[in-house]
Length: 293
Image (cartoon, rainbow, N blue to C red; front, side, top):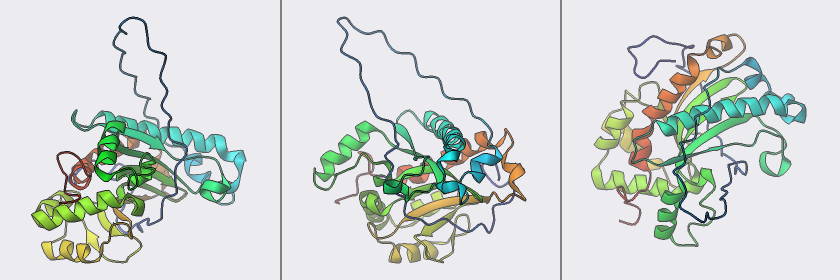
């Protein structure tokens, strides 16, 4: 895993050739809920910023608890919860490091087998970084109540993601099928501006690939020309296809030790930060409103 661009040394194993992940992410009921205290009688003192959780190295059980048959057993909930918290810390550090004008919130996936949500198995854990509540409110106003139904669910927005599977580690930007408004915003922006602005952003992401659902197309960031990106948008249909810009590293037992060092979590924070330009380019916002243009 390279820290940022391709000129620095690798901290963990080579990621080239790792098969992309192209699943349909399930709904995530495990995200944090909002709470508010009763209104004070006098002006409240400014609250100190919440301290960020420490970045902790992964351990082998973070991966092995996701492997069948353990993935279906509640006996491994404790191990999965610890892994989820490690992912959450990485996501929170990345959100905190974003420019001040980019307001983000973090959600995490459910870590226990729950038939109604994950089919009774946990084979993937993730943390999302997505638009905050105020940005969702602005989007809801633009879409209207009917189209913006369930907008608070994280996967119905474009999002940055850091994820674990039994044999893989992933960092990605994703637009789920149900986040069609961000997909449409991206398509309309590319139509209005041409592919060159987006192409420049993607080609600065060496090590990543642009992925269309489970298609076998090769859209390799750092290597694409305009024709290749135009090809992608001939096929991509918001609301029908999952779009992702992703990078994956193998985590099989034979090579996993490279992922368990203290240097890895800070690098993953940097990798999420590298994806912020494509996140900001694609996502609907007041400054990038192409949705109905």
